[in-house]
Length: 463
Image (cartoon, rainbow, N blue to C red; front, side):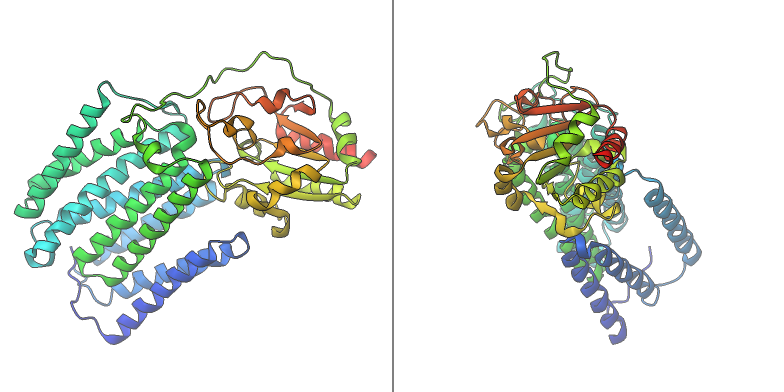
């Protein structure tokens, strides 16, 4: 592995400072859909600068291998970014988390025994990186499997889970101590294997509705692993970047858990504490609902004064965001006020709906967060729910007994009329029925969201 220069020239250090500032500015810009695109570009510029600078302070013995890896990685990244479907964005984020954790762990494995000249703190950092990086890698792989339906979305609890998990954790920590004390590469490899097992045991008992929160937590783990690897390599910029990711991921995890109305401890260790570990039924209900044609729903929308649209994962699956924007434009042309209610965890990750609507050029002013839009439902003529389910399910208001119990929801049931666009009566990701579907003021328009929205656009234009 190339050895970094202990005291790089001042201009290199200034370059590191510029790159670090780029990362900080990018994080700030990513907090709003309006500035997120610029934030991405600024962050990418900082990353490019960091990569270029490192060539001036390291040996170039393996230059062509390094350049080849960079080119290969760039090609894979570009192709993945261009081809990934909007519905698969969370899986892509989880994949990046896992790859980042694995990369940090591999760096630590190579540095064990040599980290900072064998310094004790360096050995501790190496053991920490292998452990956390391995957990992030395997845990992220499982979240991808759950989101991609390669694995059951329901919690999977191994027999005697408390004993199995406790034993795996104890042995992993013991191996980490041995690595920190002896600096043994052999024990570090054993620790990496144990960390992979620990990551699997950590994520298996997590239910599908909570997987996005676990992805955010694993993102924080990856950041911490990268920061520790930066310390091992004596690279200040890597240390700063990893710390930023770790801090941002931790804060996001906390905010997402709040949005779901539960604690991170309950999400991760509910199975160990004897809490509920199963989702509700995922079969379609046979209870009758009030359905209508596109023409009937168009009349309801076309003569309303205010409409609030609630987008959800089904909108992303149908790739119907552009038609939804067209329907909104048609309604506004009739003098109807249209807003889009955004739940913090609608879709499969934070900001999923914001990204989806921004892709269709829905004005940011019309995208309203849950805390601001909820008081407006009572004064709304029609709540149009497109592909959402759990985030409007009144079952969340129950204190217990439901996978989404306690989760703050969009109060669409407060509107004067509710219209659901659904392909079928299949429950949402949490696997439970939505009682709002059976409310007398609720109308269901069955069909593919994109087709249904196209029919609504045509019908409203004919009014």
